[in-house]
Structure formats: structure tokens, C-alpha cells
Image (cartoon, rainbow, N blue to C red; front, top):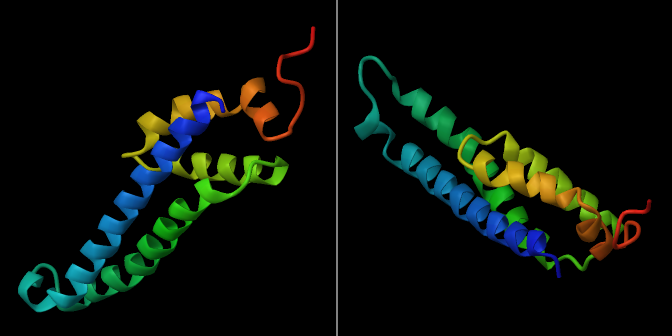
Length: 122
């Protein structure tokens, strides 16, 4: 197994933890809306933000835990690539995703997923 696949699993774990924290913070915003609200920020802002981000945190967290369990094949490589590209858009995960993206496109990782030869052809 290429090292990039191991680092991908670390990335998925980090993503799951961060999305879990997002879900918990969203729940906290909803439940603590009265305590958090002020003249400048009304109650509905916390309810709306919590309602929008809670499902995002739950879904993306669950997907991040599920993706590493997929057996390696051509479609799995594409799913993982999509997950890495989505992570590049996150400020917190970008430092991990950019080198991972470069490694993910290398021939040894692609070959692990059944996408071409193990070494580049001349």
C-alpha cells in the first residue's frame, strides 16, 4: 500500500473529527441560542447557522469515516480524489490536502487502485 493511502486515512480521520466538532458546535448554537444572542446578533442567527451546519457536519463526518473502508478499485480512486479536492477548499485541511493531492495523482497510487501501470511508461 502506498504511503499516500495511509496519509489519506489520516486525512479522513482529521476530516471526520473536524466535521464532528462542527456538528457539536452547531448543536451548541441551537441549544444555547438564548444565552449566545445579543442586540447585535439575534437568536434566529444561531438557529439558522446551527440548522445549516449540523447536517453538513454529520453527513461529511460520516462520509469521511466511510470512505477509507471502500475496497480499492477505479471508482474508489475517483471518490477519494473528489474527497481530497473538497478538502482543499477547507482552510484547516488545505495544508494536508495539497501534498496529498499531488501524491494521489502519482502512478503508484493509481496502480494500487487499478488505474494503469505501477511505473510510468517511457
